[in-house]
Length: 419
Image (cartoon, rainbow, N blue to C red):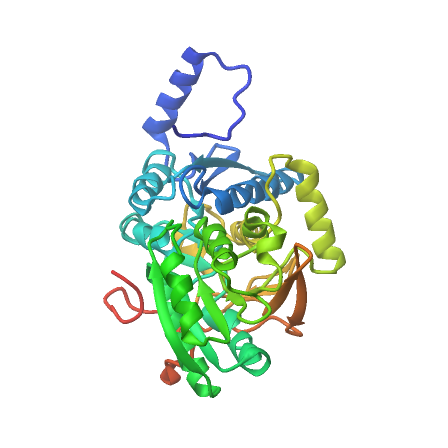
């Protein structure tokens, strides 16, 4: 069932129907010129295998947009946010974003978790010339003219992380991932970094998205001689992986899982005993000991009592909404998609993780590099970059021809993003 997060108190069903009919008959995208609202979509799952991690992203958007509205909105107009649940199904992401764009007439959408769901929306974004702000860490090798990428690129997760692991844990690495585009593309960069730093890949295995049987993989890890596992397993599968890991006699003190796909919500589901001693790399952890981070965590926990916790995805979705708001303030017409996209260039924000910036050319965002060791059921941050790191949608270790180059592709350039 579709959910509209709009307050329509005082309207009867008949009046509401009449109002909607008039609106749909005469509205341009985002509402007519006399409207005092700007329609924005929220596209995250509330059901399915990734609902656990996406619920906190929906909450973050509500928190941010409510704060923006309470502070006066966008040039005097309030944000009317409308939520769609794509049920962890990429094919439904296509259907739901079409609804948001073509029926609800949103000017932009903040949403999608998996890369498969994001890629499922690309043809619709192109055909309808609409904007998606994508908050999730991603595999790169894509820059789409109608997407602003506010999650981290592979170089912001892996470039410092893998050399650290090889130096401190050993040279033999076993790669494990969910079977779709994000893990497989990230592991190409991982292999290059491992080779460059004198390491050796001793195994590479994938499980279906949402898969929960890691028995065979755990046995292969045990016989591989690996010093650590580099994991890009995502979603609910992490709970099964970490539990199977211990149940099959593997030990984090000898062969830890080092993940670019877990956060505090996964940690909550996995349990402290099963997660102890493993590692993770993300631009943000809620344990970050700064005033901005503590304030953000306190606000979230005060507003939401639904069992969710603050994660890197919470922080990124929250920051995405504020970046969108700042971009909207710069345009005369919120429904002018081309102008709105251009207005993101160079935007900076004092986010909970620190000062971030949308790159002037490549639609990606400068973010921090951090990694942590799980101790006592929490992420203990053991490394943090001094400032935000330039995003490389095409990691220079794999694509040296793109090093220090910022560009946007032509629509007919299949090398730059999926068609």
